[in-house]
Length: 290
Image 1 (cartoon, rainbow, N blue to C red):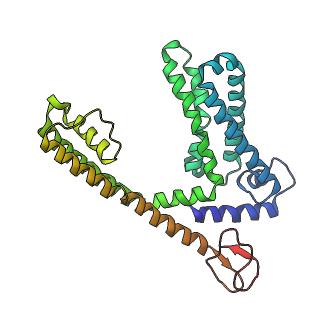
Image 2 (cartoon, rainbow, N blue to C red; image 1 turned 30 degrees about the vertical axis):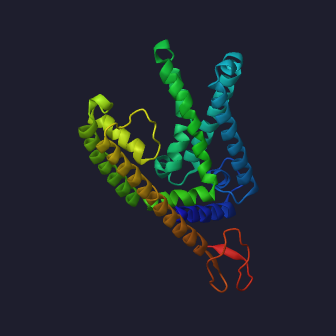
Image 3 (cartoon, one colour; image 1 turned 180 degrees about the vertical axis):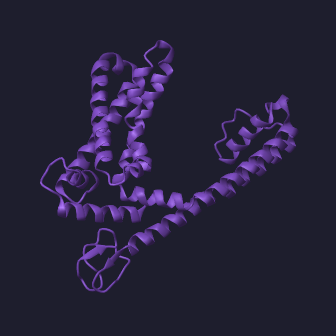
């Protein structure tokens, strides 16, 4: 992801140098929409971030019955206003992107599409039978907040760390699931339906709740053997709960090191600078991101 960001910056810089004077040319739009190194690009990002926040607040307010009853018309009008703005933004990104299909299939492209689809889909569910669907579509608009990820360097770093550790996390998840099935099956045999463990799926549910140290208390073992097994499940939960944290922390640390190494001095080739550093700590010349 970081290599793509660096490539995008180079493309933006090259396009900004050769961009024609036409305000609606592809090169000009690409520099403004995808670039953040120009005043117009920064202003575009600022307006978009504010729009996302306001649209999310509108969705939250619309879920309050009293507010929806009093200001329903205004909220609907504002929702359509932001939907149209985000639709225009999505269309412009498709229009000026050098790889339209690549953008449309990318993570941010899918998020941009999902940010506008619920409002349009709600037009096809006008019958009272589909009130639950309409409510779901309204709630889905809250995911517009995911559009903010592209503007947060730390979020990109975290996302890269999650992707890098996905296989280890999946192995851990599979291991925990296997343990939950084993412990759940044993608890079903020991306690039985008379103590609330009516089936193996219900027992697995109790095991997962216990391993994660949530412990709702809706189902509890009553026999001595069941309580011993429950104690073992609890200790197992405490012993493995730190595993995914350690995996993710190691990957985050690795990405932070790589992130620093990308900032290299063009004069003495010293790496390891902080992201906000402007001058080399060794020779003092201006830094560039490689």
